[in-house]
Amino acid sequence: MKRRKFIQNAALGSVGATLGATLVACADTDKKTAIALEDQTDKQYPVVIATWDVKNATAAAWQSLQEGKSALQAVIDGCGVEEANAEGQSVGIGGLPDREGRVTLDACVMNEHGNYGAVLCMENIKHPIAVAKMVMEDTPHVILAGVGAEEFAVSQGFERENLLTEASRSGWENWKKTAQYKPIINIENHDTIGMLAMDKDGTISGGCTTSGLAFKMAGRVGDSAVIGSGLFVDNEVGACTATGLGEEVLKTVGSYLVVELMRQGKTPDEACKEAVMRIVNKSKNYKDFQVGYIAMNKKGETGAYSIHNGFVATTFRSGENTTETPGFYNTL
Ligand code: GLY
Image 1 (cartoon, rainbow, N blue to C red):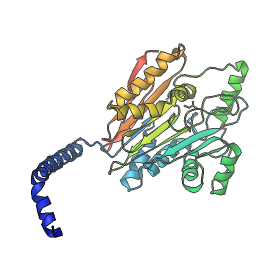
Image 2: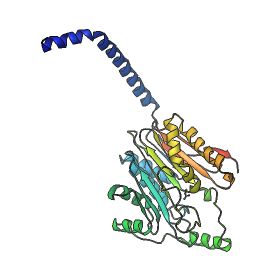
Image 3: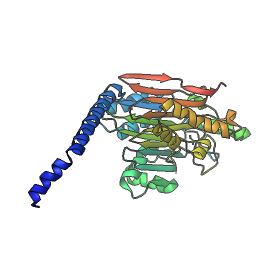
Image 4: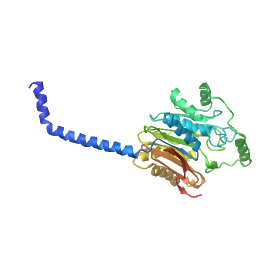
């Protein structure tokens, strides 16, 4: 058979199948169009959400998104506001020190490509989140710790400064009178700052920054700079970040868990609640510490949950900057 004829016959023989496939394709296209329209109406972005009442920080991130900056840069700009706020005693300058009086900072970022960068236990540099971004983008590594992180920051143009303010020094001097190790729930209504941002195209990035547990042992690192615990971003599904007692978040790989629960179909609220309940169910002493999660899914829907009341989350959406109390398990 000549090749041309074979093609004709083959075409005729498969007409039913082809027609069927065409109908399926049409239905598929209609479905895709319907989903696209639904997504269009359901979409709730751009949006920024952060742990605690940090309206100045979410406003800065929102402003960056309005200027067309990336979701990653928005998070860095937003978290940077709190890192530079010397009044806040849990992040950046003014953070409460460890037992030896040293302020050591942890921070990380994660972008829409699943790239991650972190600094752990870094001293003398007030913007660890910006350094974390540089670790991600400008080194062959994902984590730098301690003196190495500090030296890298200085090599990138960051200035060394004393991060121990008078207020934090006096908090430490007071603590030394009893030197009791005890996590403080809802420290001054402000703790680790985790922030998630989604830009106008639905691209997600996140960041997390902290001075960690007040009066911790020297060298202690919490969840905030550890991928999957203090922060996780999967641009196909959503993102989550945590605040509270890092040891408990680390043991349950909390932020990764929340994203995986959203992948299985849970809303951000439901996913955060289930991750909190894992901790409550495993830890007999859950009454002694706080953990809170915030999350967003691919539609830009946001949610949060914490063990105890007192935790709040701030969301900037549609030009409005709102701080709200999410669901919680236990009333203090
Ligand atoms: N979530 C902050 C820390 O435990 O270090």
